[in-house]
Length: 620
Image (cartoon, rainbow, N blue to C red):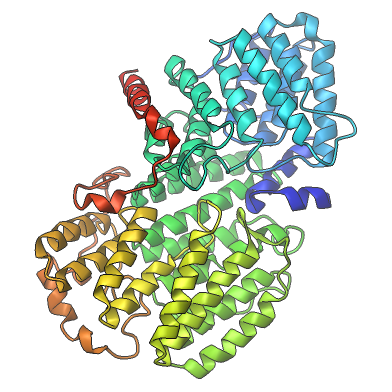
């Protein structure tokens, strides 16, 4: 793996998936009947070539690029003059929003598109246009900076779309080309779209109106909308992908990106569970892929995160364990720079649910994992602080700083540089330790610094910081009687993490203490919905760090407060029996609408068009 590739990889775990495409994949492609019914008519001269091409296209849209390459090569074998099969191989070998290209991939893609151009005379006009456009994306030798090639491909696909405006794959690939010029970076801080985002959305909506069964357009549509001020705009695509391609694990997973953002955490968790099952069946059949396994790891990571938000400790812990267990060989050696930040997921789970003894019993990580090592000292420090052992917490703080110094500027956790994430850990540990030392002003200042640093992180799902700092800040403010401040903290959190039960619980307690019982009752009902599948009563409110070393003066009546805010005590809301994946968790429950305020941007003027677009897809 080239150093350039390692530096430019945007999603370190998922970026490794590109490795499966750079080397020659095994020649034995598998025909998979459950990828959906979408087909693209082509100039293939045999049904076999057409079938393999469609499989390759569907796998490409589902980001299993190595399997796609195998299918395109099977199509080439079935029809040696099938130019579009060579185009497909070149496209599947190219960059995507999770991974740029390495040198080997660039050379292989250039060779494939060169062969497609040599067979161009056998292709239809739209196929010739697709081949000519993709030829602008590659060069031999591959340049160190691909920006000019990627921009050229966008321009070529824009022209192709003008010539063939009704071709759904042209529209989807045009949008994908735009997204690849700024991966995961489509919206400004004020909620307005960045350059190219509106063009990509327009193209995807046009495709989905014409072809509501287009898997690639739905996939890309979720990625554009999930980080927007209105992630609910991707809900129709999430609903379609529930059943569209049941054999493509990544497409089964994709609705979770929208559902988690809407506060539908149990549903997001369930989509990841289903995706894990699909991917495991695929690996039992296809064997190790040398890359796509990291999408399976992503599913485990995401499942743990959603389960944490929904109060489901058992699932979150199991998912964190599966994340590490299912990493391919070399995760702590060859791929350590990519996987390092994901090994501490289990510690984040234990901290979220206050399992202090288990945190302290966690053994050291391998020396090749400096991020994980630093996070272990952070977690131990939090556990010591929460149990009143502040001297030991300070010792772990010093160990944390030593370990954090080993983390380089190029280390990443997901889309974010590792150092800003470790800075949140530093602020959290300082705040928690100061609090147990009785230095409350210093504690709250440190925790507010952690909040600001968390807010400044680049968007990613799952978040590199898996337990919101506001949950600790709000809980400790409440413990010290700073109820109005805590209320605002929880309201702010519910804007960022919609309908999460941790913040709803805290907000209900704040409103009760402020005498606003009607509002408290409404929020309590929302909490009960959010906690319907939880296995963990919230005896300590939004953070298990609260009340662990003795109650503050304002906490004596906590139990009566909890009973007063609803028919069911907040701390004892019974977990519901597991039901259907989409039962009982609406995205936004009526209540205090200020909790759902989001920044409004220029894109809001298109809301009427979005409603018409969604209504049209539902009718289809």
